[in-house]
Image (tube, rainbow, N blue to C red):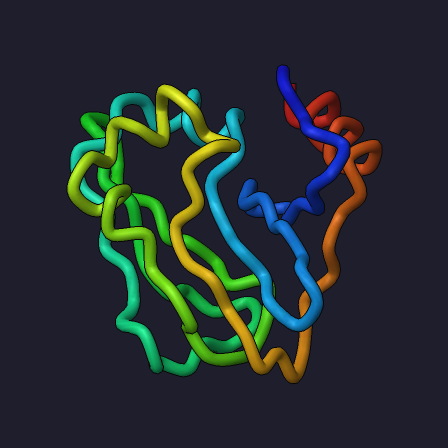
Length: 125
């Protein structure tokens, strides 16, 4: 399982790229594999407020619908329209396709290091 070392992770299988006070969020390879082929992504609008630990969107696959859980409280500053148009791209390159960016972060949920995330994956196997 690919777990890039330059990212942080959530226990709900989102990856987080931190750049100053902004956080880009995507789905991990594990999430992509568990869900199967993605057919639809629902994301918030730019300017929407999101809450740490709260759902801010969902992904629909041929198998299930799964919530995307926010790693932080803040404002949605960008949404990846290309991912909305081609949800299957997440399956092909889960770490290359981000879904949303949060800025003006006021609170964060506990993020996992790559090593902690790898351990979580081992425990779930």
